[in-house]
Length: 143
Image (tube, rainbow, N blue to C red; front, side):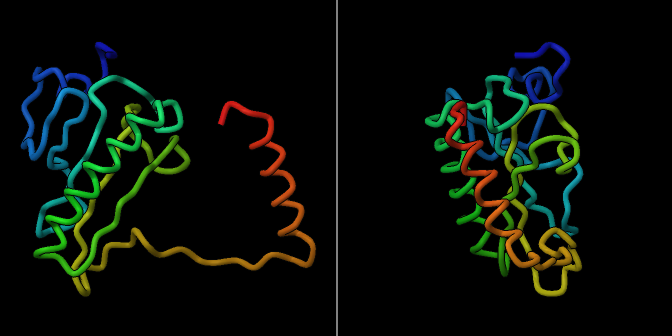
């Protein structure tokens, strides 16, 4: 655990949180800056420090996502939908350098812009170039 990481401090109980779930490896708690006025925006984190989800062991990532799924299921009992988000790196919107999953309840006309982006089209042959590039990266290993 990182001594400076706010999520590590929450996981160790040094900083209080509105805890929804906890086991030996995972903790889920309400985000103190929720995306929705109706509340329920939850963060699901591994207790052990990993900066990005891509650094987490597969088994732990699966368990973390399973907890996020349980939270999403509960939220869907009162919400119209839910976003499950992973922000990996600053450019993707990750502001706390501790791997975490956002589970955000969604309501009709909530005006949260999480799921909206301007789509683009590939130029002829571009999709195949991108496909080849990413396949090569996957084949190089470490992923």
